Length: 154
Image 1 (tube, rainbow, N blue to C red):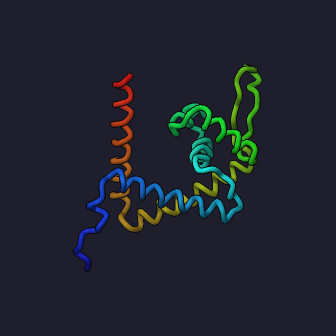
Image 2 (cartoon, rainbow, N blue to C red):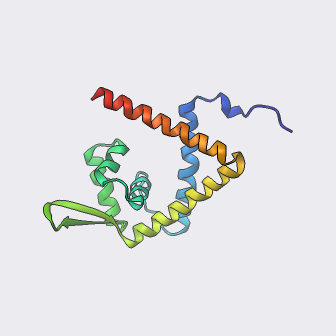
Image 3 (tube, helix red, strand yellow):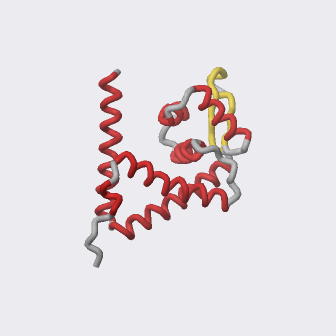
């Protein structure tokens, strides 16, 4: 039995988070490419995944990316041109646009979700459901710390 501590336990937490995120993004990107969705821009994965969940308006999703309005507009334009998003004028307020996933966007979101679920399952297989829950709690606490700091800063 290996009693040596894992070498990554000495790595700073922000670096661990970055590398762990790469595990998910690489798996999702691979699955999307294999399924024929090889033209999604980097932040497009986040936008498509978040829209598929449907819990936040596009403006909030874009704000969470922490990019300029110009970059956000270019991202949405690229996703519309590549057939992942549909942009229409809101019939009740002609000044507003509504952005929804197209069928292609929904299929890409399903592919992305399946890849994410596979990594989640492998994680649980390696560390167990209780530790996976603890990891989620720790990450949720980090998100709360950021939100509290932003709220306090006004």
